[in-house]
Image (spheres, rainbow, N blue to C red):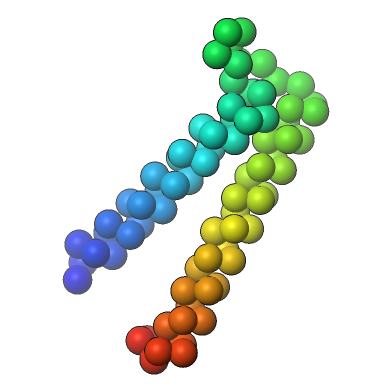
Length: 74
């Protein structure tokens, strides 16, 4: 159904935006008291969080593809 596929893509967008905000807070790019600041070390941490999040997402998608192949849901 089209709605289910659209909803799945919408959830992916929510996850990406949420992880972007969370990783910015964790990396120290956005400090709620000082506003936005960016140094080389903070930018490196921000990119590292993004690489980890992207890796986890791709691992999750590969696992879903594996489960679909095992069940024959293609």
